[in-house]
Image (tube, rainbow, N blue to C red; front, side, top):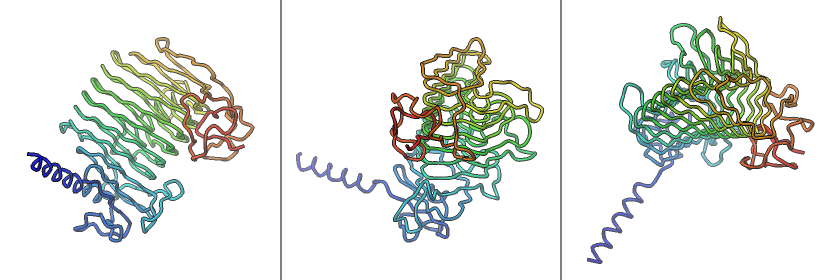
Length: 405
């Protein structure tokens, strides 16, 4: 019996080794046909093909030279990492200085560059765990990244050192009534969707035409749950028509939507209301927004394409349902919340011009900024959006950037 048991254990160990995760390689000029993408010297030519070859636990490594024209879809059980910024020989990696750039396919102009989840009305029930690290998604119309949870789906997407930029609504034809032309994340009944963003840049996305909310739109429908955790990220120079020029968090029916934003900078966004952040709920729904060490300042509430001015340029929250907002060492200026909204002032909040470096579209702080050394170290990340350590002074700086003395 002992020998038989040992033999079974050996077989199980060997089977586990055979099923171990693989690296898959992608480089422009590579070949997809008949290629499982597991050899760096003969990589595949498209991310879409490599994802189709990958097994759960694999890492898809993408070289950074040139543009990848893709409509990637991940819609089944998997744990997968898309790793960008690799050199042509896959020997070195620079995800910040040389990220991999993805653009939409010309034959599928309205398809997102990356779709994660279950296309409706198909049935869900999948568990998906995806990491996207070291990419730029640009020029998508109307959605660049789309995360959609159907009934029973458990979806986790983590974006690291990733930029979403220059997304735009298609002129005529396709509507973006759901918004989210940079990032749309939704949870249907029975679904749980979680999005994490670390050292991300959501910049210069815009809507051309009427009827849209939220450059980034996180919405939970009746029976669904959606959550956002954003750290060390920049949301700037985006435009929407109605609400949420930077970010819209909404809950419909008996659903829950939450956002936890730490050491981020949300500025220079435009919409008719809540141009920085907008939070809305319907009866029976609940939403919670937590802001810590964050700049929410310098956004503009401007009526566009016939929309009605709503106000609350930096933050708007209301409609109906339950909304709770925690402010902890936040620099905010123009805030409009409806009477039923609960706002908890946890201390250290300011209303001052941030003191960005003149002409710096990365919105770094100057050494003279009033936000230097006035944040809280409790719950702050150990580095900033550029990878510099925190804190470098007496305390953590407010915003995505930590000033180097």
